[in-house]
Image (cartoon, rainbow, N blue to C red; front, side, top):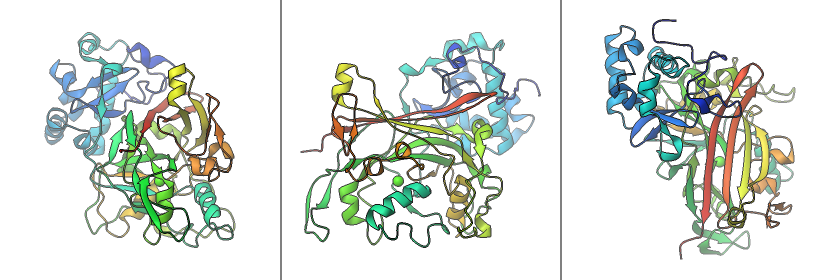
Length: 440
Ligand code: CA
């Protein structure tokens, strides 16, 4: 490679940041996810955070090495690093420049880096940092892409007809709300809303009684598309900047009363928590897998949704709950579910291509989430509605109490990570949120 650039994805590459070499850690030098701390674009390595503007100011980061002689690219990188208060301008860089930035960061942070001494003065422990939203999120869309989730939920409400006739033809989604997206660690106030005790009403207004989480994987759009144009499914992967964990908090009792005929609304839009470090598609490339094969009785996918290269990811996903009592007593969080993102019926490329297929303009920093990630087994179901089967099969927590849905004080902890022989573990980190009592 050229001067001051290293292939960040080389499995043998190591960093001088000691915590990044822990084989059980999420953030080796091959990861280098982007986030925002103190209104500055940063990368995380091990348990440390590097602000790109600090790296430039201390003289370590070299704009010319990133620009590679392209004067326009140099200006754009400089603007993104010096003036950007979030990751948006970095995500909007052309692919070549963005990949050179990644390669330069790998060179800076590698073992025996000539810049080690300078960088050690500006690297900060993540424990002293408070990451905020990585993007100014313009739009947020939530899909419903897990066959097992859609079938489970459908069978609770329509036992004879769990999957609606459109489901295997069209990636189903709805427009969510961007204003209430927050980064982990987060607190979520139990929402008020209309709920009913009989299916036909009348409703009462009060605190949600059936509070739930939804385990999802989200991705941020890098390069968008002009309004009226589309994103080809075969190129859609290259429009994805990176991935995060998403908790789509859900008020099930409110949802049940309001969701027909137009879909989710106030049962969902009071809060969505995301993990703060956006793991780039380049870092996840070794873990890219095709979507599951369609069975013989499944309809053929329409050509505009045919994703021949595959864009699912083999991300292992865990959900834990800890009650307030468990935290007081020092009891470890209880593992509630353990699954994988690899078996999603609709892939990220299909979701993105479908979203833009009508000429809807996707923009840098738009967040698209997958919908609840559920697998075939009981312990891989990604929300309590499914995990406790509408509360009929409560789960046991480490303090001996039972849960059908979330109590006040419960903390939901989601983790996502990729492992494969011959490759370093790449993690998405954690997505945490605590349920606080409803306002009185
Ligand atoms: Ca959802």
